Image (cartoon, rainbow, N blue to C red):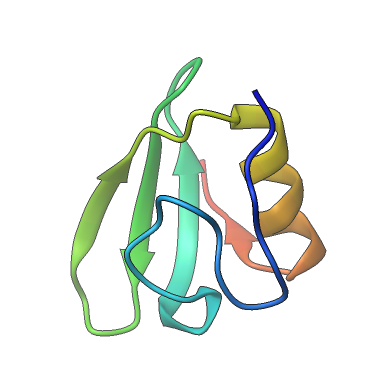
Length: 64
């Protein structure tokens, strides 16, 4: 399933890419997002590959 996204927002994600400090790909479909306001959010995108590409294209730091 392909999701809709643009430069700043990814469909289903309740925040913009500017709010994301870093992320961890924790499994087949789970991303743990670290936000600049120090919140940690779990996110299960319907388009895992599309979301991962979207994060990489915006140079959001991946942590292990």
